[in-house]
Image (cartoon, rainbow, N blue to C red; front, top):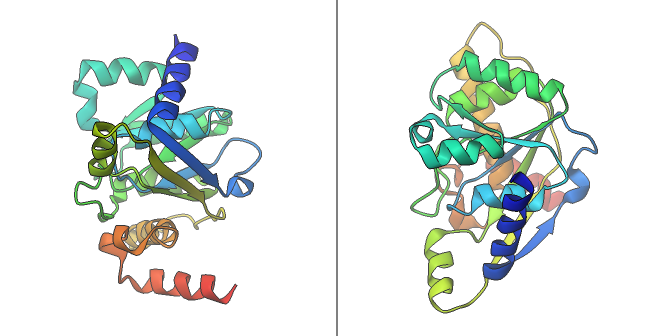
Length: 224
């Protein structure tokens, strides 16, 4: 069933979109790393399965969807881990570490929900906590062009939507200290989100558009 569903996802995406992928060289050759993305539209989760089919992925999904029978069924085939987006979810953390130690790849969208205004929202610390606590490299990935408005408009006109996935360089974050834990977690969330935002068009950067860390990253990229 999983092979059929993957084939169906790839076939449908190829019918409605042209997907450009850049930055594959930044992905570690083996599992045991985190992919952090922005979340523009409902197509983002299927895109992860479409673009990274050679990896054994698992995806963090907001706990509210666990109550939905359809999402639970889909999650049973595509390794969804339902998580509390706002707090340190110890049950989810144990599952994340177990899977990553087995070489699987974790996909997170720290915003926790798609950007209905087509701009990045503030990242949720609960999701960041799981990514950092696991202690594996983090690869920022920018998703460009999956806004629901654009996708639905193109579907009505029988046009394919142009989508771009851009992978940045992997980085790691130090363990979370006991002192100033919440402040550190906020800074780590901002770091992850700004590393995604620097690869996005300016109009999609939203909450992070004027963040000091984003300005630093933009300056670094201009100097390369």
